[in-house]
Image 1: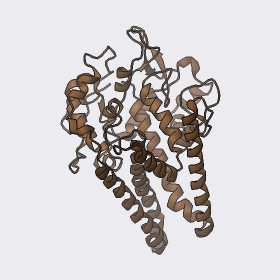
Image 2 (image 1 turned 90 degrees about the horizontal axis):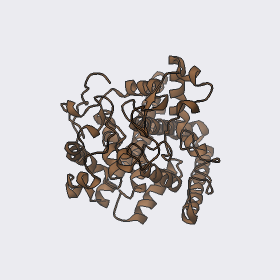
Image 3 (image 1 turned 135 degrees about the vertical axis):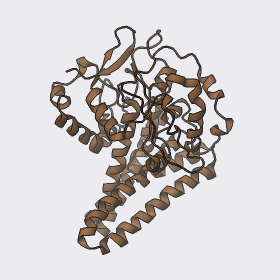
Image 4 (image 1 turned 90 degrees about the vertical axis):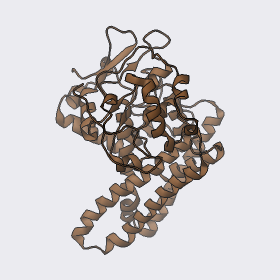
Length: 397
């Protein structure tokens, strides 16, 4: 996969040190990941991690949440009080700057809600769900609905048959327009743009790029095949009610402040949040060097540990890594131990790398280039040919 690449540099405060140092060339992506059964167990990995990394502190977690809320509040003040007073040419520059900055601040809050869904925010499940529900509802996300499907993603990560998100097609499953979309630079660029702009709401609404189900699946439908049991279905209804209440609140705000004010102050940053969410998740699980697995139980078929390791840590730079609470460069350890709080994940990542060896995937390719490479090379999956149950991305159309 080309010459070794180095991670980006930059310093962070204690608790948010980068998971991969700039001179760690040995852990960068150096070709296809191994697909043999690992010579270590989950227990071996856990023993390498300092025990305090598994401790959840409600005070520490709330401190990060308050940081995000404070940043968002300052930016809202900037949008409402400062930008309108600027000369017209400066306003044209200030609004996109605001959208980008607010999208990152709200993206951090989104990640905190994600942690709540994994019971990584505190020792109290009810508190985690209350905080996660409030945050995700404010961002028009059906909290419990996504929590349940996301848990299934973690249980089946890397499986062609049971994973929940960015499940690649086999070549025989490609639509008739695949060559036109993926066979040209313009088509790939358009596909990426649509994916970033609409991928998240389409996934929630109609399971776009998700696991194929025998019937229509939506995160808003309590009877969708994504969910099971009375408790899950009731929580989907609660999530729907939360999103509806948030939408009605936005409608009242628009009536009071004006539609375009709400669109500029809230709507545009939300599009940025959604785009980052799609991009980060896409690049965590889509790479020519990372396998997918079919079946299960056999020597080459899917199993949980190899599926959890079939993900990639990436460096988005010190600012974005910190804004997104290191979900970008500590995703491998997150898949292994999803209830670990984010503020210990970088330390845990450094601790497990000697155990994982070549099974640890880190790619320091600049993010824009990595996204373009994935769009170009990861069109569908084909069987390994030498190893039953192993699939690799391909792009020959």
